[in-house]
Image (cartoon, rainbow, N blue to C red; front, side, top):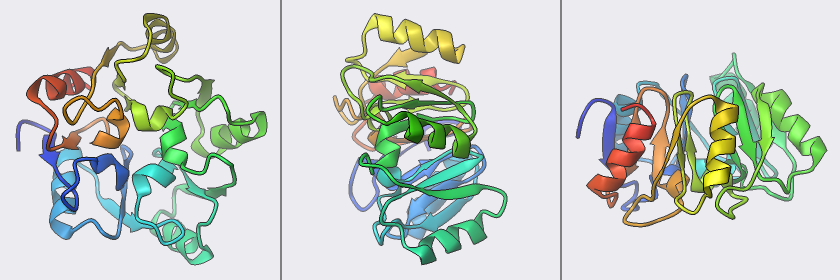
Length: 225
């Protein structure tokens, strides 16, 4: 443990820890491939329990499943048994399948419990579905040239980390809407895919083991740790 609520980790030997996990302030979703030891490290860092799931048999939860404390969006290809199982495990959370061409939902939706910044390529109907299930205000925006806003940025209810290609204009616009300041950073020694490099909620943060001290300080500072 580095400090309160902050940890570095590899999952299955990989530094892109966010690919396997989608974290909220009430629970985190993780793929079945994640070991019990790795799950324990994540749970201890972010302070909520894990719920194991998959989407179409795939364990890349942090790529394909978008979630906040109120809702979960499962991708096209999710099996009925997976949907039923997750609804049973999360009885107080709305869990729905979301049909879209942009099927890597977590990569394309950056959500906390109040807002969702979404890939502007989503249709208006898809935008309404995201807003309805997650119970959020939606913001259509690429950030730093990336429509994959979830893969390239990190948001919690307390803070925002933008990839370092985001413009000052984008940064100011998003900060004004969200009502809090952001920081820009890379992770895992220069990766702009900061969302795939991290697992975060309001209570804690887990980053890939390759993340440098400078990167970690910027990310942790932006998220209030």
